Image (cartoon, rainbow, N blue to C red; front, side, top):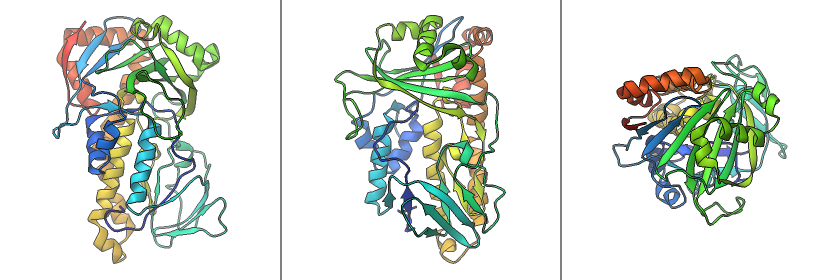
Length: 392
């Protein structure tokens, strides 16, 4: 949006760089967006190696290994720490003339498409004024704004968000070293009530002031767990042990692993389409829709959606300057968002339910072993293009 000539302001609640719960996997399509923003080369120097394969480790049954795609422009999937990614993106925005406010807490968003907006935030006696707002706050608890009319005050913290499939799960993340996993492979798998992803996410490179630095390769383990299981085991550390004990593939990978820092937690996860546009408010990332972390599309979806919104607004730049109704832009964004991302949310939900149920996952992997072309189709349904290269 800044490159198209709009005046843009970012209000960020935290000081960057900072860690957060995230699988840290970016598919080739996401790296293409980063290349378009002229940050991919810089990020490559701090990211993990190119990822060529996905290994699927069910609790019971056969393990699968399939090929990940290479984008038409040559980009491969890679993983990178969120501290590094977010910090460099914010730096790039500032270089393009975006005004950055951090750390600030947005308390109210008042107004609508016809009247414009007032954005109230902590520490300032006067609100910011804007023609439109982009909401990228992530939480479903802050996303239910479709019923607002012009002049209505939205107070951050409003509840009421839709649920879809496995809802209310909690998410955990920890960085590890001394993990036994091929550098070119991302591992996903599950046990009863839990699924996890493991990937190399870089080495000693880290954003300034972003936490401990290690000389060994750094791996990211993220897992999603049903609340009942957390109540049963009591802590993320105990769930980590539960995953190792009951999933042979992850047990092999993590047998000699050592933690770097502490577990981070967030939740609840509430996958599904939320709000894409409402009365001058444009939603991106998890605020628009959350995909189960299993298929590794959360970051890519957020990057793609941000690029999509920027393109839609740029296409309407002249009309926008002439006072065009924002609803026209909002409907164009919503239609293209649903067309581009709707299937990823659906299939991510389906695959996660399979891996969190051992009997179902054993049946599914046996079927995929017998019909490996179906595995390629599953990867395509999740937003990827791929082919199975090895099944065992």
